Image (cartoon, rainbow, N blue to C red; front, side):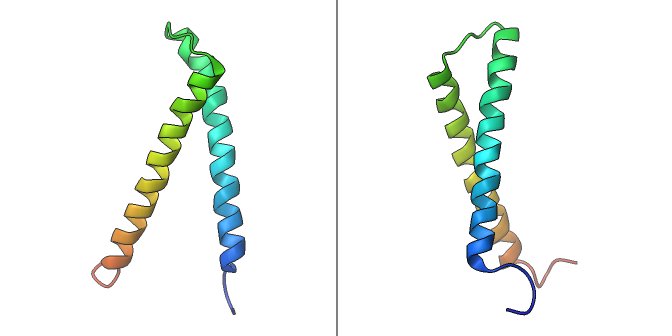
Length: 75
C-alpha cells in the first residue's frame, strides 16, 4: 500500500476514537444531567451513551456509503 493506512490501522483508529467518545460522553452526562435535574446512575448513563454511540456509528457509515455512491457527481 503506497499511501494511507492499512485496514488494521484504520480499524484500530476508529475503535480508539469510538472508545474515547463513549468515555467522554459518559463523563459529560455525569456532569450535565444533574445540572438539568436528571440524576442517573452510572449504568443508566452508560446505556444512554451506548445508544448514542450506536446511532453515531450507523450515521457515519450511512453518510460514508452515500458519499461513495455519489462520489462521481460531487464537486
